[in-house]
Length: 271
Ligand code: IPD
Ligand code: CA
Ligand code: CA
Image (cartoon, rainbow, N blue to C red; front, top):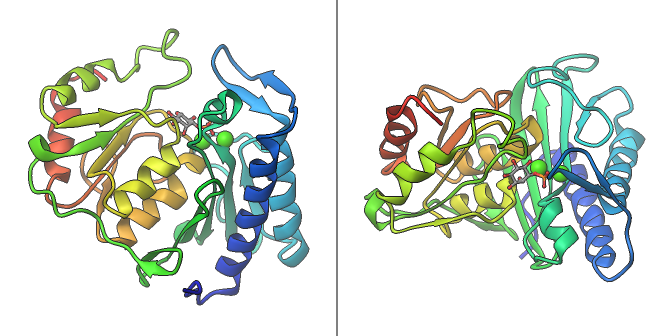
């Protein structure tokens, strides 16, 4: 089925995401350079090539728009929105870089569009499975053109949830281990996929029931979070009251288990 996309900007994000996905797919079978951004935080030449293509594609059509992209414009959460035309493109050119660099097949491209500080579209493309997740605000979420919905699992004890851990977990106090200890006693299973964006869109299509993580960046959550919301799920920060996508903590799930999840992340006073 063809993608059902209304806005020209979303269609542009889809085109950029698909073309970047080709770079990543081809990159798996070629030599690539790896640099360390931190002790565990890698960047490859494929991340950079993917990002360059996406930015070139967007700039070609919307040269005045703000671009917030992981590898070329590091910003603090909250920066990079609402300037110029009021539109911002939030780009993770390769979410799951560690997986990619190790040949572990779980990674994607993520592009979100913000207008006046509000998320209006989200695109995530998994090049290995040729899976394109798209949401436009108020118009639902789709996987390869078909509408998707979050799961209907009612209880955390019947749920499979996913999470991740910050790269600086040995340096910072927020390492997510206290949350992990609490969740593991409450759920059917926990997965650590290594791509926050794919974790989120897997919640959106019901493959996972929920996802939580902390200390993420805006490009890790913006597209996936909107896609979960448009698929009927609930997305908030750890407090459970609303979602500010410019902050690093997120709890996403179907609305039946979401409160059970925020009770867990909020219950220990430690992350
Ligand atoms: C990372 C992945 C991972 C999450 C990290 C992110 P990157 O993004 O989404 O699952 O646990 O916090 O930084 O570095 O592969 O783009
Ligand atoms: Ca990422
Ligand atoms: Ca990345």
